[in-house]
Length: 110
Length: 110
DNA sequence: TATTTATATTGCAATATTACGATATTTAAT
DNA sequence: ATTAAATATCGTAATATTGCAATATAAATA
Image 1 (cartoon, rainbow over the protein chains, first blue to last red):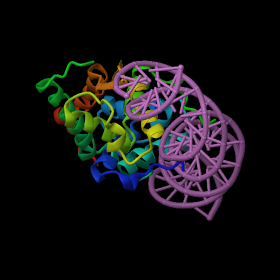
Image 2 (image 1 turned 180 degrees about the vertical axis):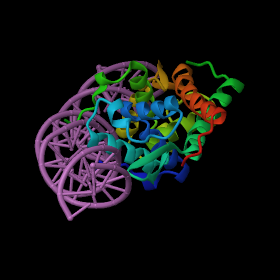
Image 3 (image 1 turned 180 degrees about the horizontal axis):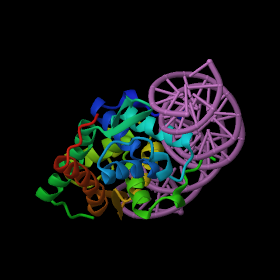
């Protein structure tokens, strides 16, 4: 025990969970917000923006990339990380689906 | 080490991370989807819908509730769990913010 | 080529999560 | 009052995550 029973769930459920999980850490939220703020790729200065060590930041970037939230290219001496739109569209769609549904058929038992 | 450095991040970043983290498990995605599908509160049959034991499901429900994704009332012999709209609006707003921003100023370096 | 700069990887300790059996709690029904 | 039901909590094992120091890698520059 201890490991998530991934194979007992639908593919789409696992996909959404992976995306959500990737965003389930304040440092990774901060990275995304910083990407938006500077309105460009991360090229070098992300470590100074976060209250974490360089290896830790690198690890968080890796997780965001693995989950499909950001994408990265090698850019000379540094790495260029950007938001990966398809990944974010997928999770945004999930929440839109939920809230649209709630607006249509408001159940009020709670 | 090992624990998230919550106090080094902004309150809003921690809030969003908590919400996203709560959805970062396929069982909890499945619970939300089931709540939408039946279009009512969960009253008893959620355990049969999931490939997990009753204590595990109970634990997942608790986490969703703590994070503010669902809310629950005692309803006689069972518990009535519903989607908690404010929580979902908050995280939906985050993703809308991101995708709106991306549409406006599309950076194309990656 | 040596050095600097930027990022990644390794290894490890601390902590958190996941899952479930056993048990407790709480309410409804007998 | 007992029993049945539904859900929660406890205890615990297995696994995952978080964070960083040390080290590796790779490219730019002196």
